[in-house]
Length: 76
Length: 385
Ligand code: SF4
Image 1 (spheres, rainbow over the protein chains, first blue to last red):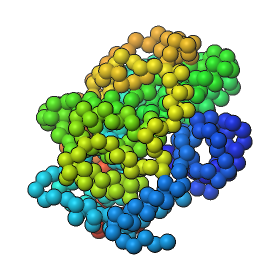
Image 2 (image 1 turned 180 degrees about the vertical axis):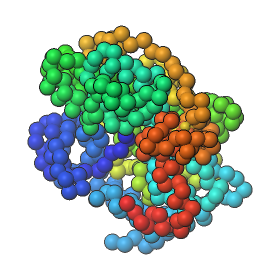
Image 3 (image 1 turned 120 degrees about the vertical axis):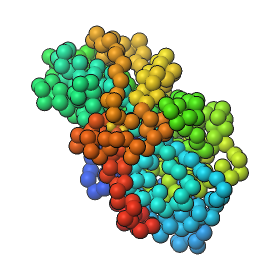
Image 4 (image 1 turned 60 degrees about the horizontal axis):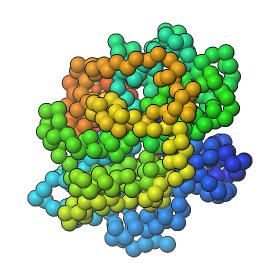
């Protein structure tokens, strides 16, 4: 029920709608809750709505932090 | 999928687990409540319990929207469809939640009530547009993640003058539930449970931000780490919690920085605030009446409020006698403590609400729990999705 997924914006249709890629399947979702989306952005999709943007730089930082916390060399 | 698979890496999981093992003190217990069903699901599915030392205890919280819905509210939804003759649109998970007298929305549907499963609030609007001669009610449930889509539907209905559409609003609030858990006396006979920290909500926090948990962390002096739902997220959050607990620190920390900020999604918050306001109190399964813990529809949208449109007196109904959901939702008991777990109560034939959705504690244990023992440490995560 609380399931939400990170999906990629393929095309912004208008202020309220965008086509996104959900694991290879394209789908039109409501984007009225998130401003200024562009193609290539990632959003968190929940019950047909983008509920927030996914910050790609932060995602990379978190992965980097895992590697540090796990005490291994960062593989780049 | 990108931003999912990287967060399920088995090798990193074992390394994070080793870092956790190094941080753990052996002279104490770490009782961590994962508030959300999404975390409960991840912990069971990836066998995370087997990856961490035994003195870390995962205690399931009430963060499963289907689980906390009390019987009385499902009864009202059934009443809407059966006695008021509306088309009731509902999220799929809600259909199988047991109501009074072994009823459920699914059984009411089999008996002829017009109940339709929708994926989104906007699908319910479509049903209303396609059936102008019928009343259509959207059975809205969920935490702060699911509330903005309902609020958008209310505004779209108002803008379009879609007067055969209304919402039966059951949206509940996370920080209020956390407080209710922490306020309950720490005993194991119907009261609360001693806790050292929270693995905090993930998707809820994308909307409300991390700030609303600050007063809770301060008031009860507990650490709360907002955590993503993937296994590496959960492990990292456990490590962050352990460090705080070992240092004797409370406060709110954010692990899920890729989607959560302190402020959250302000636009979504504004949309909700325009359409909904705080209820004085709301009944939760397991927690009983909790003050200021849910939302109702504002007067300005009163024409689209099913509770005003239809006569729906609320009746509180006790759970099935054998069902321990109430204690499980407070963290006091575990699924295996229930006598009918896996026998009279299974996901195909749930007796209580915790067995219905994949995020329910009982359903997660039923589906993955028995595997945990057989799995080698770490293999569960390595296997990934
Ligand atoms: S096993 Fe079923 S009856 Fe028992 S607590 Fe869980 S949901 Fe309730």
